[in-house]
Image (tube, rainbow, N blue to C red):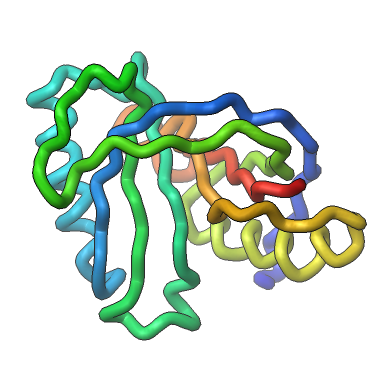
Length: 161
């Protein structure tokens, strides 16, 4: 962890069941920027602005320990479920309800890796908690271009039993 990383407080919360439309990025993490741009265009076409419809990421893999061609990430927008499936890249999914360890990170995405490592490597082994069968996910509470990168707010959720 970097010397500037201060471990955030971990809060146990009950996350509500949340329907989302997920843009499925599959493959090299280098291409995530292109996936985000395509997702933003789709989101604009469907009138789903971030200030009204929450933005989530579902992390299936660690980009540092996964072969690039096998990497999986979903870029999601909360939805009422009334949108129709948009082909193979944007599909309806559900983030299930349940207990989660939650941390809030402020600043650029460079802090996210350190926060996630802290959850898995330090907090989880000392918490007495067990993982549940759903990947780690994040809610982008405030993000660029609405706020400066150093003012971005991301809530990270680690599903636990």
